[in-house]
Structure formats: structure tokens, C-alpha cells
Length: 82
Image 1 (cartoon, rainbow, N blue to C red):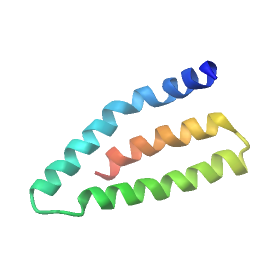
Image 2 (image 1 turned 120 degrees about the vertical axis):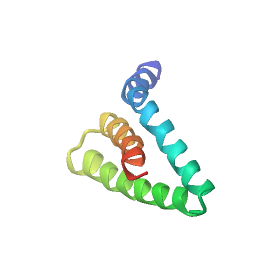
Image 3 (image 1 turned 135 degrees about the vertical axis):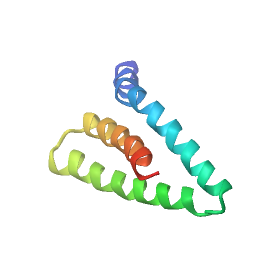
């Protein structure tokens, strides 16, 4: 179990900064009277996450590595969408 947790952290840790930047950008957008900015960004990123999970885990049979990679890319996509 500790090995899986370590692997997850190695995939997710580099995407922490873009994720925090996305939170900052959406909070700023909401302060500027765009109340659904966070909802929009989160909805698109979640849709992308579901698609990536189905591709990496089901189609490419990557298993846990696919889940970690899809989650990492979802954090990056939040920053790119915001």
C-alpha cells in the first residue's frame, strides 16, 4: 500500500503548483463578477479526467499508473482551462 501511495505522490506532486494557480485564477474571476468560473473549469477538468481514466485504464490497460497519470493531467488541465 505504501508503494502505491508513493507512486501516486510522485505523479501528483509536480502538478500541485499549476493546481494552486488555477485556484487563484478562478477565485480572481469570481471576485470580478464571473460567478461560475470555478464551476466551468471544474466541469471541463472532470470531463477530461473521466475521458483520460477510460483511455488509460480501459483502453491502454495501464492500471494504477493510468489512474495516477490521468489525475495528474487533470490537475494540469485545470490550470490550462482557467
